[in-house]
Each structure stands twice: as C-alpha cells, then as structure tokens.
Image 1 (tube, helix red, strand yellow):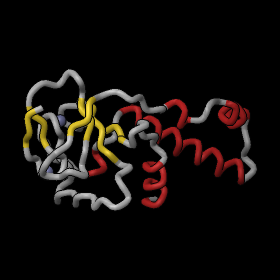
Image 2 (cartoon, helix red, strand yellow; image 1 turned 30 degrees about the vertical axis):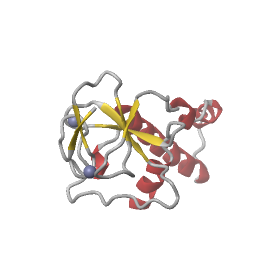
Image 3 (cartoon, helix red, strand yellow; image 1 turned 180 degrees about the vertical axis):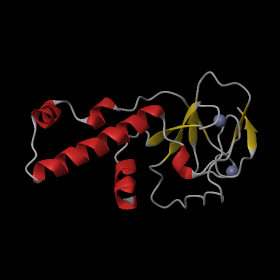
Length: 149
Ligand SMILES: [Zn+2]
Ligand SMILES: [Zn+2]
C-alpha cells in the first residue's frame, strides 16, 4: 500500500519551474515548494512534525499538504488502478472502456505558472512560491523563520 501511495504522489504535475503546489490543512491557502532542485544542492531536512505553512506558520506532517484537486486526482488514479486490475481478472466493463478514451488524468491537473518566488537565507535550497496578493511576512517551510516580503 505505501509503495503505491508514493508512486501516485510522484505523478502529480509540477509547474515549469519545478514547483509542486501544496495546500495548508489549517488556513487552506495554496503555495508551492521547489521539488526539482539543482543536482549538487543538499535539500534541507524537514523538521520533526513536518513542514510549516508559509502564511499561518502551522506545522503539520508531510502527508497533510495535498490540495483538494490533488486529493481528487489521487483518488481517481487509485480508482482507475482498481478498474485496470479488475480487467485483468476478466471483469472488463463498458465503464472501463469509456475511461480509456478520456483524456489522461495528468492532463486535467496540469500546473499553471502563477505565484511569486520567495527564497530564504536560512534555507537557500527550500525556495517556495506564494500568492502575489500576499502582503507581510512569510515563514520558512523548514524552520518557521519569518522573513518580510
Ligand atoms: Zn496555513
Ligand atoms: Zn529556514
């Protein structure tokens, strides 16, 4: 089970700069974290208890930051996975054929290049993107250090 979850998580699309969209489980605001880091950079260790929200500063375990669209996406990929497994058992249905001709789920979740980049002096490899509308301070997702933007 855990192997499957890890594979689904990796199939979530990034924006063209290599950032993954996240949603805070507390304030429900969207931000993005850099996933495709430079090959020679050392990614920071996430604190015990998980990353911090850049907006409200809440700390939450790493698996709590999926956006609603990503939750929906992973559910549907899992459902499709089950449907495929059933077809291998000879339980093919009309429903399954309709699913095959639909555009791929990855296309539906395509990531847009919105938001502004914020870099942290305390953790230079942990670049994030936050809403252009946000005014005030932003927390580092790794250590909760606050900077003004
Ligand atoms: Zn928050
Ligand atoms: Zn930091």
